[in-house]
Each structure stands twice: as C-alpha cells, then as structure tokens.
Amino acid sequence: MKAFLLAGGHGTRLRPLTDAVPKCLLPICGTPLLAIWLDLCFRSGITDVLINLHAHAAAIEDFLRQSHSPVRVRVVCEKELLGSAGTLVANRQWALSEKVFWILYADVLTNANLPLMSEFHLRHQPIATLGLCQVQNPSECGIAITDRRGVVLGFEEKPARPHGNWAFSGLMLAGQEFLDRLPSSVPADIGLHVLPGLTGRMLSYPIAEYLLDIGTMPNYLQAQVTWPEASPRFLARGAVRAGRGEPAAAGSPVDYPCG
Image (cartoon, rainbow, N blue to C red; front, side, top):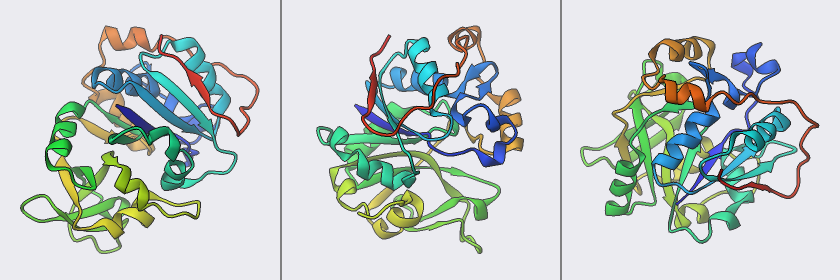
C-alpha cells in the first residue's frame, strides 16, 4: 500500500524552531517526527511513501539519505506550494496502481492503528474515510458533522460557528474516485476545496489512540511529555541528525529505497 505524507508547510506557528529545522524533523522525545512516521508506516503495512517538500527540503533529503528508511520513499520538491490537494493532483500517476491509498499529514503525531482503519475502509468502500478526533478548539480545525452510521453529512474548514467538535485528524484513506474529484487548478486544499463537495459519500472513523497536531508551540511542548512511545527503541532510531546541504531543486522526484 502507498501513502502520501504531506510535509511541505513552512511551520510558521513553530518559529523560531522552524527557522532552521523543517517541522517534520523536529524531535519528539529525541526522535525526529519523520522517523516516527516512517516507522508507523512500516509497521502498518505501507511499503511506499511519497513526501512533498518545500521549506528546508535539503535537510529532509539529507535525513533520508542517512536514516535508512524502513519503507521506500519518493521525494518531490515543490518550488511553489501546491496545497494538500494540489500535491495529489501533481503526483496522481504515482498512485494510479493503487485501489486504496493513504493521505497523511506529517505534522500529526500518532500511534493510530492504521490497519484497523484500512480494514474499515475496505469493508465499506466509501469514496474516502476520514479519521476524526475530538478537539477543544473546533474553530481552528476542519470539522465534520456525521450521522449515527458515521456518514459525513457536512464538512467545514475552521468554521466561525462550529456545529460540533469532531475534527479531521490528518489521517484518511481514499481511492481513484477521490482523485477524480480533485480540482484541476492549484494551489488547492483538501479541507477547503475537496471534502465539502463529497459529503454523503465519505465515512468517519474515530481515532481512539494517541493523536496530536504538533503544529503549534503549546502542542509541540505537550508532545514531549505525553508521547507514549518514547522508548529506547524510538530514541535509537532518532539518532540520525538532519544535515545541511544545497537547496533541493524542484523537478524530477527522487527515490530513496528502504534500508
């Protein structure tokens, strides 16, 4: 199975940490977030990951060269950010062979049981399955309204007057029909430009495990004391330091085989 791991953002809310280090390489209890993601993908049966890069792309490429990823990684550098949906449009060919694929937001820290969510999606076969989690600040998230069967009846990105607190977690499964519904113009965002038009055809899946968006400083600091998998195994995997190199150029994708 393949997964898009969206990592192209600037991480502006985490400055000054992200002035020199990309958000996906910030350490969680000593382990770069990207290493945690690649480990989770490997343990979940994901064999191929496509990562889009923009800010500090060279540091991420250096990390991948040194870290011996447990899965095959393809890197695509975006000279101008395409948005979460735009990245899927630009790299659609990479996923054409897949009946189902993952879309994962790299600024989420989680140990979610992805195989169980995948089984749910394959059993019901909606156009997409959205992992949802309850939040205290729904006006800052993409909020889904569901019925008792879990069908997503409404979706609004950062609503001024939220009608609930079940937020899109940054974990979702989709297939080729989902790609057919992506806008052709970029930049485009999944939450703003895609999900609102698919209501009634998506299912929700509550994430019961640990999940935290580390994109703000309070959440990033919270992760350091609440992350349940801060074990010696994770600390050892995170020993590789992100290096500095020449800026990566936008253009042909670069493939990093699994180590």
